[in-house]
Length: 334
Image (cartoon, rainbow, N blue to C red):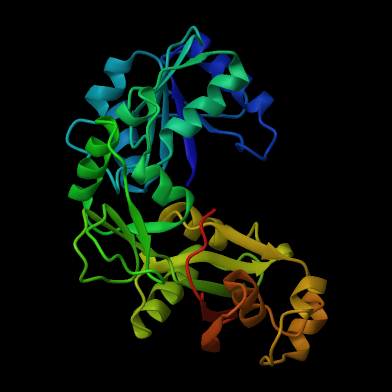
């Protein structure tokens, strides 16, 4: 997802600049900077907010972007009024005071990784991360963080509270995976479906989508093709483990749009590694000449899926775009 920061003062702007100067591109990429101020001048690299904080917040919250307010927490709270709906779908929101002393995640700490982002930002500016989620402050198992880190889909939101309550009461949290069905009731089951008694079912994300496209392809066109292909194959976007492509395409705006909008990680491979993908593929001399390998979408989907893969959709092509889908063999805890 995109990370957008808004400030309301010169001090706030300096903090955003400090964060961006310290970014190494690994743990965090530079924030997209916005300024809402009556001052005639804004710092280089900032975009002036011409409307108001309410519209800016609403527009970007709906897009699923991570929002970072550098200013009073009350500004963020009022601007968010009526927007949060669900802890599993709300975008992460963070507040930083304009002295740069505290970094406070106030929304989507686990599912949206706001807590993790706050800790990274705090380390960059020597601030204190203020984490308030119960499982973190009591140092107990967080099932929603576990799901995010292991790319599992939470199917029953109510189960999160039940499992977390057990952890907070210092009770054991039991877990079963699909290859080893439980003989007694357990708290968490990792499987596609189950008839066993449980508190929470976590579904492994089963598919990798390999993609290729011409340079600077329109993101909305690629998104439509991506979603239609999933629909035609009865695959939900929440079941996608990763978007896969060749390394020279990982920065394409269309790829980044899908990554940010649907919170899907991107895996990229160089041409030499793609050539080593096991199996037979739909070869294209044009693709070979432009990328160094005869097929990008099928090969990348297979490499992303890992051992025991099944290529469930071979290469499909439309207007300079290609998609292939592979199915992963099972769940592997990260």
